[in-house]
Image 1 (cartoon, helix red, strand yellow):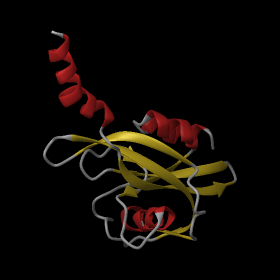
Image 2 (tube, rainbow, N blue to C red; image 1 turned 180 degrees about the vertical axis):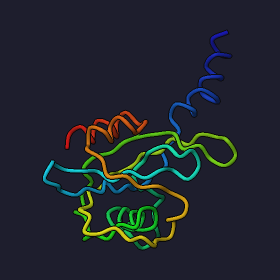
Image 3 (cartoon, rainbow, N blue to C red; image 1 turned 90 degrees about the vertical axis):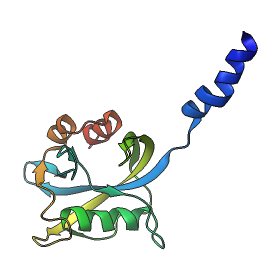
Image 4 (cartoon, rainbow, N blue to C red; image 1 turned 90 degrees about the horizontal axis):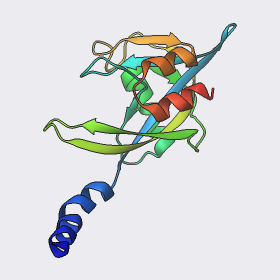
Length: 152
């Protein structure tokens, strides 16, 4: 029986637990207001839940550049380049088109927003909302992202 269990562990269970994370880059878009900092949340295209702009790596761009590109495409953000180091990370399971779940490690870059465009690539697919970091933490589903928001 132990040889059978060892085979199940090595061929089935272990690969599931040790599967590598895919990588994404996210923009935590912020602005200062008289009432304190605010965070820009957007809705996801598929479920409509509240998220921050994020996406897969882009050839020729580093993490910060990719985060800024995603902020433009998904939220119409105009901003200066964020710092090259992420402010944190969070993980989540990305549900793929075939229904499978891919674990994703997301590096988060803080982006200071100068302006929001009304016309941007995904304007007709998403909603945007400026909220306090605590309200943002209540709206998002990912526990590690909540923790990042509450540290602001």
